[in-house]
Image (cartoon, rainbow, N blue to C red; front, side, top):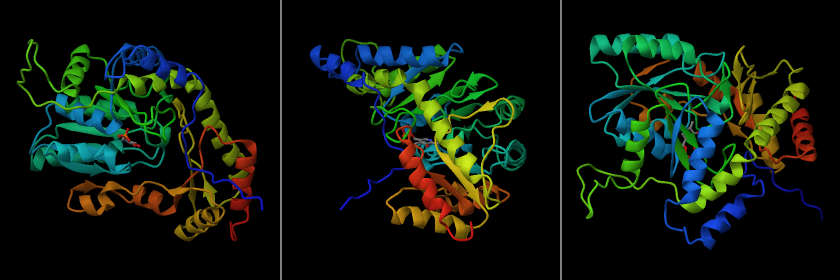
Length: 376
Ligand SMILES: Cc1ncc(COP(=O)(O)O)c(C=O)c1O
């Protein structure tokens, strides 16, 4: 019997030369952390992003956010404003620092942090408590947030912005690469991202001191002495030379990966946007999304579930849009400034299979099943 293969939401997609860089690490015995692939991968990312950035490659995107907070001096008792509509890793490092997240809802044009609610929250916290220590804004699913508006508010109140670009490598905002738009950006190379090192991340900054501090903290905070001397608490967060080799190979195909993901999105949009019950997130003028995941918003929770379960029966993975952080049990007591936007997206939205390795047969198979959903 012929069985159909499982289609994943977003699976790793090697380009070909990753193995060569990994072999080089083995051949030269650069298996220990650090080494030429780490330097090479950082240079490749710096070159790709341009905009005069410095890059430190680290063990994960989560570690990168943690170090960004550490470098900005966020500590116990501080408040950090964080986009609610995101993956929990955007917010967890706030708790690692002993600080408190305050969640901000999204606006409907990009599904990212609402500048209006951000300013309301800042005014409220200054009036009732004290000034928040940082803002974490997220380019969700690859769509840039309204960076001009967010940055203007951040500047007005002198609060630094950490740009969570974990899902947005290859996206641009007014022709500037996501990850380079604020005080510090972070990237993720987790297995489901647009390129992967199996696990990994990076801190991106315009400030060489921040990069040096990140590398220092990520390598156990050793002072400059022949023996092991420590005047601060360090972390073991550096990317290994073997994994950076995978990253160097992946950088060679990043543009192709962006094209393939955008093509998936175009395919779904062309074939599904004729249905009133399904809508897509458009790119506003000047916003260019890598379309990391192709997302639809349906007319009801019931329809969203019908489509999801239908796909699941055929061994096709799809996933509801992120459940907002202010609705998560672990963050239920946190203050939030919300207007129902992210909650509605969570209830009615679905991420469709989006891998850059999907072929036309896969896409036709997915579409065929969606089109068979009753009452579409
Ligand atoms: C928006 C967002 N932020 C942060 C992360 C954390 O990245 P990592 O998995 O590399 O720790 C992810 C992905 O996993 C993410 O999607």
